Length: 624
Image 1 (cartoon, rainbow, N blue to C red):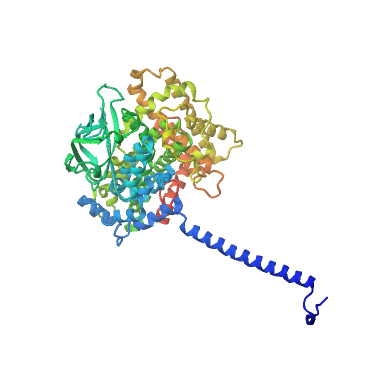
Image 2: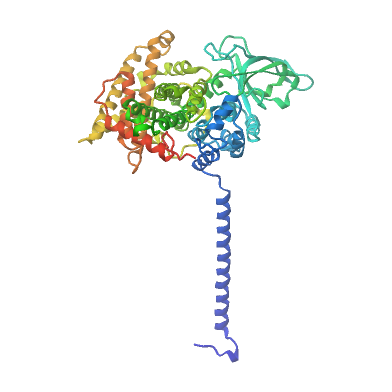
C-alpha cells in the first residue's frame, strides 16, 4: 500500500522510517568499524618484525654479491682489508644498520634471540665473508653474555641487554685451565674487601691477560676471576663490569697481538690494578664461575658448526668456481674423477656438519637435559670434518691455494680463519672430555632401551619452545638421538619390498646400529667414576667413534623428516646414502658397493647450487 503523502505519515509509516534509519546507521557504523580494522591490520603488518628468513635474506642482500668486482664488500675488498689487518670498510656499518647485537639479546629483554638454530643461520652471511667481522663485531659479545643470561640477576640481564642494544660491546675474560689455548698463562683475582664510605662489601680486582677479544673496544667485561684458594671448582666467580662505572686509572690496555687467522679481529691485552668493584657485580653466587663456564659452553658449542659451515661454504664455492672455469681445448677440471670426488665429499661433509648444527641448537629447546653430549659432539666433529675437506680441496686448487688475492684468494683466507673460529677456550680435547663421562651411563641405561628424539629435533621449519638457557644440563640422563638411529634402521628394515635406492641405505644404517652395540659393549666394562679409564687413549678413540655415530643418526633424522616433503632435496635418498657411506668409511665399517650413482647426483646438486647462487648447507638459501 502506497501512503497518501498529502495527509502525512501514519504511525506504521513512522515506525518503518525509524527502522530504516536504524539500519542505515548500523551499516555506517559497521563500515567505519571495518575501515578501522583494516587500518589497524595494515599498521600491524607494517610494524611487524621481519621473520627469521626475511632477516637472513636481508643481511645477505646488504652485503651484496661476494664475487662481484664492483661490490665494496665483495671478495676483493675483503681480501685487501684482511691483508692490512683491518676491518673491511663499511662492514660494521652494515651490521649496525641490521642491528646484529639484537640477535644476541633474549626477546624478553628487548632483543630478537628466541631460537638458537636461527641465530646460527643469521650469522652465516657474515661468516661466509669474514670471520674477523663476525666474531669481532658480535659473536664474541654473545659468548660473553651467555653466562649473564644463564646465571645473572634481572638487574644484570637489563644491564647487559642495554649495552648490546645500544651498540656497545662486551668482552669475556676467561680463567686459565691446564689445556687452555692462551698465548700466556695469566688470570684475574678478586679479593673480598670493604669498599670506601657506605658502598659496603665488594672486591678488589687485580690481574692481567694478554689475549682478550675486543679488549679495548668493550664497554662491558665479563670476568672469570679467582675468588678462593681451596683448589677446587668453587675457586672462581664471574663478574659483570661496566668500564664506564669504574675508575679509568685501574685499567691499562696492553698491546694487540697479530694473528695469522682472523687478522682484523682485535686480540689485545688488559691489566687491572687495585680496582674496587661492588659485590653486586657477581653473576650468580660467589664460587659459581666454573659451573657457569661449563653451562655456558653448552650453548656456545652448538653454534660452532654453523659458523664453520659458513666459512667452508665459501671455500667450496671458490673451489667449484675454479673447477668449472673454461680451459683450452674445451676441457675442465671436472673431467678428473678426483676433482669430482672432492667436490662431492666436501659438500657431504658440510651437510653432515649442518645436521649436527641443527640437532645441537634445537636440542637446547627440546632436549635440554640430554643436549650436553650433542653440543660437544657437534663442536668436536664438525670442525674436524671441515678441516679435512679443506685439505682435500687444497689439492684441487694446487698453487692457487696459496694466493692471497684475486678470484681464488678467499680460499686462503678461509683456510687461515677456520681453525681460529672453532678453537674455543678448551679445544677439541675439552669437548671429548665432556662426552666421555656420559658414555658408561648411556651404555647401561639408554642405548637400545631409551625413547627416540622428537621429530621436531630434525626439522628445518618447525617452531620451538621458548629458549630457556637455565635448563641445559651438564650430564645427560639419556641418549634420544642414538634411539633415533635405531628407529630409522627399523624403518628401513620394515619397508619390504625395499626400493632399490634404499637398499644401500639400509645396509649402512644397520652398520651404524652394530657400531652402537659395540660402543655399548666397550663402555659396559667402564665404571662411570673410573677416571683413569675415561682419559685413556682408547676411551678418546671411542668418543670419536661415538661422535660419528651421532652424526649418522642426525643425518638419518633429517632425511626421515624431509622424506614426505614433495620435491625436497633433503628427502631424497641419494645424499643421505652418500653421506652415510662417507661416515662409515671413516670408521672402517663394512661397506656395500660404492654408491656412484648417488655421488653423481650429489655432484649435480653442487653444480646446481653454484650456478643458481644457493648456499651449501641444509637450507640452500639464496645468495646475493
